Image (tube, rainbow, N blue to C red; front, side):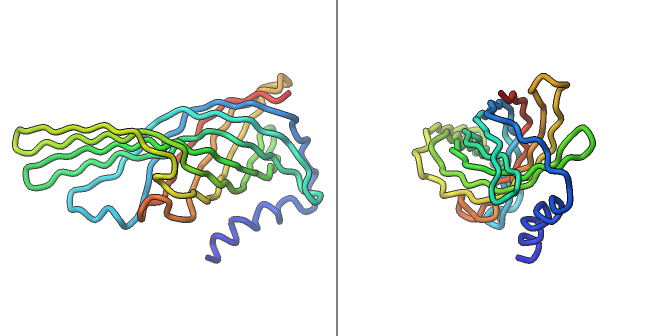
Length: 201
């Protein structure tokens, strides 16, 4: 718990006494995420969690809150994982791609021409897909299903980013690491990297 509080408090401490960065106006961003999961619920011998990729996008806005600069936004961002299990002559593959609607906020901190950021996000599950394929001694069984909204729970987490403006055009590229603090997926915590390109008006 101390590490979580330190992660949240550190950006506020860094801003004190520093020149506040110029906040962008409204912005749009798109990107591609490499996401996965971790947790104690995968306890099958021979099981391995892997990442999956999926696109995401959203809108953002720079605001001042209590004298602190923030960038806030809303977007559709993926979560998910692949699970490969090899055990006793059988192999199974599960791939989950869950779509979340996220509300997020970040505090930017200038680092030379780039800027680092840290903040939090809250996401609600709105859909996705699940695929399963299992092979037992030469017999293959597969199943595909759509995920219903709410199949996975609320995701509350932290985000840590690094962005780089592209000249004076208003465009930027960046990467954000997402880390869940709770377990919205039956003992699994979401995590992943979101590579993005954005434009501020």
